[in-house]
Amino acid sequence: MALETSLEKPAPVRVIANVMSSYIQRLGPIWVEGQIAQLSRRSTSATVFLTLRDPVAEVSVQVTCARSTFDALSTPVTEGARVVVFARFQYYVPRGTLSLNAREIRPIGVGELLARIEQRRQLLAAEGLFDPDLKKRLPFLPQRIGLVVGRNSAAERDVVDNARRRWPGVDFRIEYATVQGHDAARQVIEALVVLDNDPGVDVIVVARGGGDLEDLLPFSDEGLLRAAASCRTPIVSAVGHESDQPLLDLVADLRVSTPTDAAKRVIPDVREELHRVTRLRDRTRRVVDALIEREQHGLATARARPALAAPHRHFDQLGDVIDSLRDRTRRCLDHRLSRASDEVGHRLARVRSLSPLATLQRGYAVLQTSGGVIITEAGTVSRGEVVEALLASGRLTATVTTTSTAEHADEERT
Image (cartoon, rainbow, N blue to C red; front, side):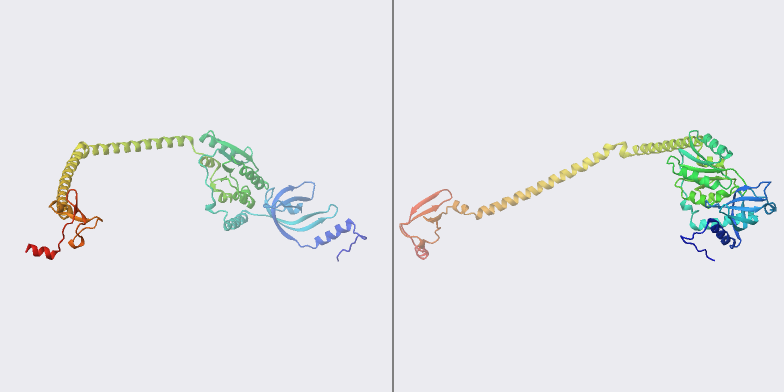
């Protein structure tokens, strides 16, 4: 029945605790999967205390188990192991704590782990986290390398020593993290975030030596994979050996087989680069020498041609052509000028022959009245009228004494 309370009638804490315990006891048993974060197994206690942690989220729950149930496990489990627990909810009234009481514990076998990893791989592949187009290109010579390794690990020595043998001036920023166990994924994620936020880090190497499947489980953690995919800095995965392939290898921009191989792939060898520069320089010198020799041969061949052996000959030929054209032009121009001069002379003679002045030069005169009117008929003037005569040279003034018409003049001639 529901608990009835009010401001005037509040329920004591013990009543509330008992009601909660009653509610929780009604819940049925459940199967729970998780990773053992802490394990307390005292020889004097009949109860084993476990802390079961979710490997993806920072969530944990307390689990109690009878010692006989824990000791009956066919495969002993330790901290960091993945297990499936069949348990009931348990509420401890004196302390007000909620826990799970395990009735059965089953370690997750290798086959089941592989199946879960494959299921996670397919899920993340469908999201596109493994898309080759998302892979970032590594720099040719990184000025600073971010390194995520376990403290005092062989992987750290392999990467640092081999990198500095290849390029002595390389710089490292090392972030240490636990690379095995229940807290490994979280620490590696924190190290990646620190290195990715450092603008001086050009590439990040996550390195760990080999191990069994359970040792490498943190590097298939979904949270770690998403953190690696969101990094702006290129990531190199150097986890395990050649046969190992945690899911971090698929998310990383470059996957290498071992930490030693990571140093070889990330850092160029200064001796190899110097040798390559020497070979390229020699090849360039040979190409330039061949080019110069070919051009010199071409110049010598061109110089041996008649046009270049006696270059003035061509100009002499052009000079003769110019002289011939100039003489031809002069003759043509003289001919045209002579014809034009003759034509002008003929036209001038015609104009002169038609000119009134020529008529006057033959003894004729032009008579005009005192008003300037030309006299063409005798009847237009009268006796005693003064007229002017225009001669070929000068003028005359005369007075008319007599006039006669054309008929009278013809009769007199007759």
